[in-house]
Picture 1 (tube, rainbow, N blue to C red):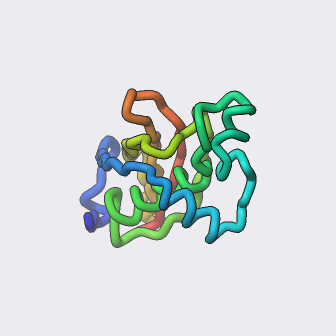
Picture 2 (picture 1 turned 90 degrees about the horizontal axis):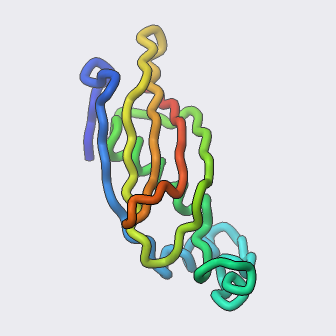
Picture 3 (picture 1 turned 90 degrees about the vertical axis):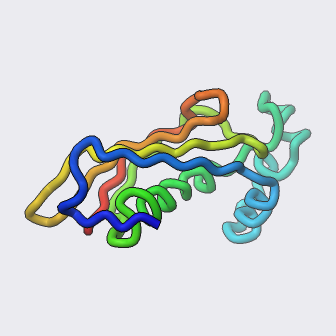
Length: 136
């Protein structure tokens, strides 16, 4: 786990990590959230709607932004304050998601950092993007 202090961060500081999305993650998210939409739970239904298979929950893939700021950038010293996410492409079980975040702004008065982030799959396709504000 990283532990950047506010002073150690600068505009351009970047961190990246990868995670493989598993069927177990999909089932756990379904159980936790109560979202039983067949688009996420039934491959045949999802295929009938034009998708390759069950679509991974957008909020599941978005949860990796929490990992980004809480573990990698800046890590244990931060609290997530605001996030704006745009969903661009579907994610499927077995996809390997690479999450990258880069500091784009610092506000010294309140020790706030803005991070521009994106998640892409194993073929380099951006599946979502985010702007994240954290306090340190």
